[in-house]
Length: 215
Image (tube, rainbow, N blue to C red; front, side, top):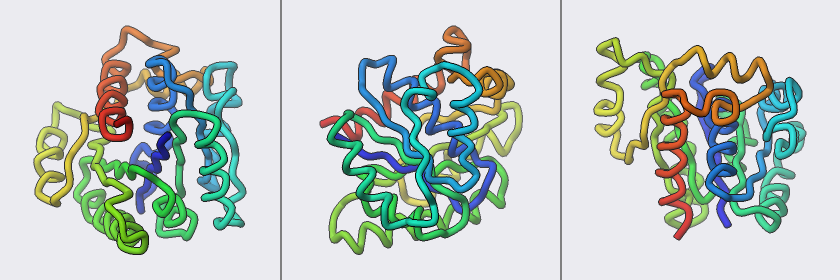
């Protein structure tokens, strides 16, 4: 039904965290999901192997040496489930571009650092290039404020800074210890701490994404 790719030129902005936890939130909403781990670090695969939670059943490792295989894998997965999520490498590798070419929606996470905002422009340009090549309104593009500390000025002002770049901004995700604790158990926040503020944030993000892709 829909393919969602998460892109970012910079590492450490929460791409894998967002993909994994969105998968759990969609599953909790009754949606069938598949996750394609196309990052050479294969953080999602490692996360899934830590336990027996949702990710252990839905994450598929993608060989990054063959970027041309990703669109076919995504299309095949799309026939079997409602939502396919793709985690991509940092930087500007071809596999990230291939993900944008096949995606219905591209999420661009951005942390509060001024350096994160600078590198976000490159990821946005990559997504826009894919849209131009497709001669389509797809992929739709949204920013996701990520790893925020709302006690800081940078954290509080990030959403407004992103809005000035001309794309819509989705609900933010904070920097919280419970996220790392869940990963250590091989679980998502939805499974590990369903009553936490972190779960509420990922749930809000998933609902916002669902409104875009399920029409």
